Length: 319
Image (cartoon, rainbow, N blue to C red; front, side):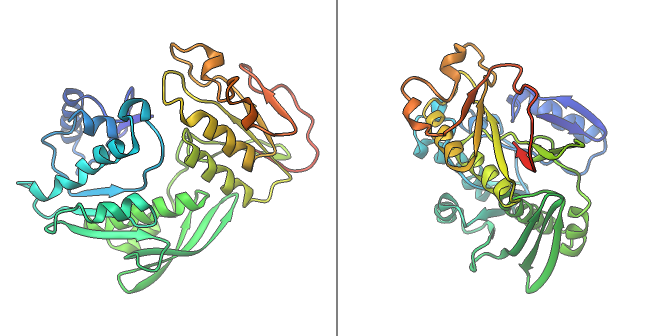
């Protein structure tokens, strides 16, 4: 995680900075001559009003799945925090023509549509027939993904140097946002094809081996499941998942993540993932209470180093 201002790269402690830090970063962006800022606004930041006073040209809702319940308590409270970004668009005083871009393949996205002020322009996206920006006919290869985009009465062939259905929907959101800001779809599609790999987002690790290694930041059951299902589409002989759960965070999702790996991977290597102040055995997805949830025939549990030298036979994908 990092902040980028022009050519400068700054380390990031939080997804969304504290309010004073955020204003300082925005001032630096202006002083660097940047014409726009793109940022991820976390539910924590919205709940704590870190972005209070900011006005938005475009706000994008991707999806909502179980996470951060150690902070929000319930999914209802989590959703209500996320909604703040969108329900406030209609009351902006300077930027009076904002656009909300909403994934209607997600059930919370459907609910959000009814909460947005009628004065706000809404663009929907997804893979369903009702979406304003719709992706279909996607093909996944180890080098990237291609799909058909239907929007504004035209069709486009989109080539993306990222893999996975979720990257398809995320890229459609990016195209819709760019178009809402006045960028032509043709130019946006062309630029998307030349985009670099996103660090930690199904990032292919260069290795001259008979297997492929991908790194992904997935830290929720849904995200982990999407990554593993995507890698299954590459048709590997074996799929090996190395994963863990951060300490001092939502414990309810740990057995769910274990179940997800059990369902989609051939082998699991469970490691200590940033235990913070929590005892390592407790931050492992497999506690004594959860041991019956994993039914894999072969399960490896490791701390560090993660992987000892292994002998491979045929092509495998290591996540």
